[in-house]
Length: 421
Image: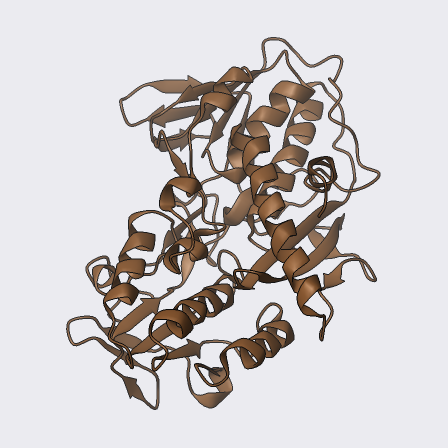
């Protein structure tokens, strides 16, 4: 098993990058406001305090408890409690960050002010926006907030996670569960397939005559050969995957009739997990940070918005090109953004460096696989470095898969401790 120190190193900015040693010359009067307290925003806030302790850092986050999406598929499968996904902000406060549990409702990029839902305004010298995702209600015909109460997406951890878990528990043995997977981009590219794996593990134990069908808007997905191999080994024909070329792209839902439609077929599952199209969170659109894609274009090296100077966008909301929308990537982006913001406030140029991403996925509770990537800004975008990174080997033995499951658990404990502890 990797040591905790090993994971702390891995969760940092890539090898050869600038360190987080305090930066001399950062203006004591500089004010940075960060909107959004997930893995990206909270990481950025804490890194700023470490890298430039003279800067005043305020984190705006409406929720007092953060519910992490990584590992929430284990909650759905009954292998983990939701309380294990919940983290407060006491550690962030102890690091010297001012945390305001309010919602940001508007941004004035000219006057450099953020307006909160209680009418208060926060002035800033640099603003970091990390709003995560929101569901694009109606982008899939028939799928709205009411439909999500019958066909949960469970793509924002919390009540929806528990709703999907209860529905699976209530499903009869011999029933049909369907996962509708969206076209890219979306939060956590391998997430639907890890979810399918863990639901299959639950069904195999508790409802072995049941079937799980994946209707996918894509023909390929992250770690596909590894998932397919694991499904065949562990679940036989319990899981069936159909892609876009099979005519399986979800086209519409009828929540009242529990119907899920493609262009060619109609399905009536007992449980429907509909993962719909997504976009950057509300405040990004309100501040004109997002483009027609629904996501936020940035200057790769600094994460500064190409649409609003002085505002940086990190995490799932940003268009980071080859970098996936993952917790690991959000953490790394938050740290690097802190470095770049501090340098800009000190009158220095942003630095060039690499960022890392590693994504673990469970195929069963003691069987995990992973993909890793190394990224560097090239021109206007983040690009993968050729020859760096890779996936778990095919045909690895059970001990190797078990070790990866241990690594995944270490990763989660380390990143959540680092960000919220």
